[in-house]
Amino acid sequence: MPIRTHNQPAQNEKRKYLRSHSTSAEAVLWMALKARKIEGVKFRRQFSIGPYILDFYAPELRLCIELDGAHHFTHDGIINDNVRSEYLMRVHDIHILRFENDIIFKYPEGVVASIQHAIQERRMYLEKRTI
Image (cartoon, rainbow, N blue to C red; front, side):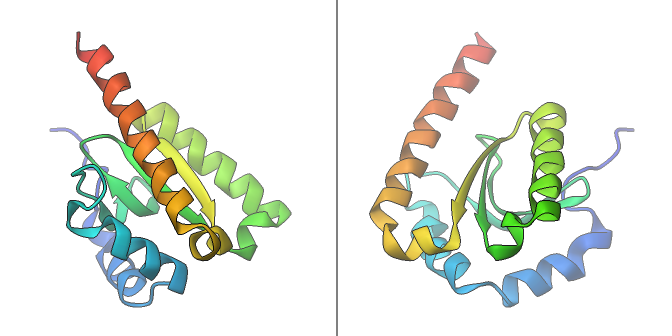
């Protein structure tokens, strides 16, 4: 029987807490993502894969969106993000988009356009893999 790596029950409480205590940037981006508003893609909030909880995740495309606050720009934050990204890409073939929290407020249309572009790219990539 394969080992479950997605949404492990041990992380349910933490995921629930993160959903109910989202940052203002997460709340704004969620309004743009929910209900398949961008390219018809279903995103999930606070989805866990392995030891990590992703801010937003589209399982059908293996596309993750992470919003980065100040702690991501510290020495330890950069190292942790690099280790996390390497794991998600290498082990699960997940593409990661990162946006600074400020960008969500300053350039929301640009963020949505970047997400649309990434969705189109992921669709093409996954289509080529299945041929």
